[in-house]
Each structure stands twice: as C-alpha cells, then as structure tokens.
Length: 168
Image (cartoon, rainbow, N blue to C red; front, top):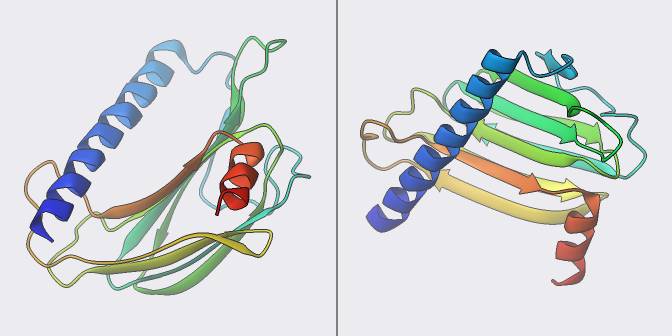
C-alpha cells in the first residue's frame, strides 16, 4: 500500500505541476479571448453537449473538492474554449451528471485537500450507463508534504471514452 500511495503522490505532484503551469499561462496571457468560463457548479450540458452523459457517483468521508475542466481547441479557432469548475462538498454521498460535447477534453478530479488518516474516497464514473471506472481509496497514513489524496478521470474526448468501452 505504501508503494501505491507513493506512486499516487508522485502522480499528484506531476498533475499539480501541470495545473499550476496551465493556471500560470492563463494568468500571464489572460487565457486568450477569455473563452474558459469559470464556474462553481457543474452544468447539466457542456459546450452544447450532444455526445452522451457522464455520471459521477462518489462518497467522501471528509470535506472534498471537485475540479473539472472541459475544453476544445479546433483548427479554425484562435483559442481554446471551455469551462473550469471547482465545487466544494461536505462529507457525504453525491451524484453529478453532465452531458458531454463530442470533441472536448475531459478532466474530472475529486480530492480531499486536508486529508487525514482514515480519509476515504469511493467513486464510479459512467458514460451513458456503462461503468468506465470505479475506485475506493482510504488514506492509511498522514500525507507527506507535496502529496495529495484524490481520484481522477481524463479523456481526450468522447471517442476515446467509447474506444475504452469497446476494448473491455
């Protein structure tokens, strides 16, 4: 379990570095024409939807944060368009549902920022009623500096999600 948590911690640090770089770029450039909309709730439909429904069922034992981004960059666009969501949750069970667009990058992460030993995250991610993944984690020792306790799902678009379902 210790090796798993160390691996998870390394992934968290790399992910955090990537997010920090992205946020730094947005800060320096003003994120282009301002087409990344920041929200505090996950909308029912993202970027006109039409390509299927992503469902997140999760339970957290300590206060948690959902961070999600949905974005697309097309050849005829000068800048990326999309949404970025950050929503806080108390300990408990939740369900979030969002209709995805066909051609957008999808990133969803649920973490417990101040996780203490015994913290639990259990979740499942479904697409159009088909389970894509499920995880059930429990933190068994204090987090070291620079480490985080979270689960995440990413896809380059609906086609990647469908391909992963077909290969099961």
